[in-house]
Length: 189
Image (cartoon, rainbow, N blue to C red):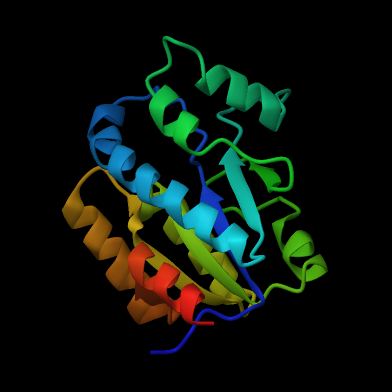
């Protein structure tokens, strides 16, 4: 099995999320278990010196900061509170706010990745069939190698999630690995 390159970054897409939209309960059903696996993966990659980058929607609030997002998504009445609490950023993590579905569209993500000398993106987050796919597509167009951590993305249904993963494998040349496999590859390196 091919290992995880040392010039990788873990990109967490829309994990600080209020889940306050129609049909969010369907996504939350799968996001909770994915968030627990992502938290474990995050700890593992950090032990191996792999940077973590939060790429988060601004939810149409053009005057908010990432800290504002964290505070709002941590409120007691916020449906996404549990997911957010599992994936709170550390001081050495990076973050990029995005205005649309892709983490690259009108953001500094590409500049940050080049500054960090990143060549491979480990992708996780929500929704797998929307923001993760759009980010993966734009990463592929910029010649990044992709690893979709397949049990660390969630969509509103398992079928949509499977289709998203298949699309990324077939069209974007992404490797699809479980979080356990990624952690195992890191341990062996």
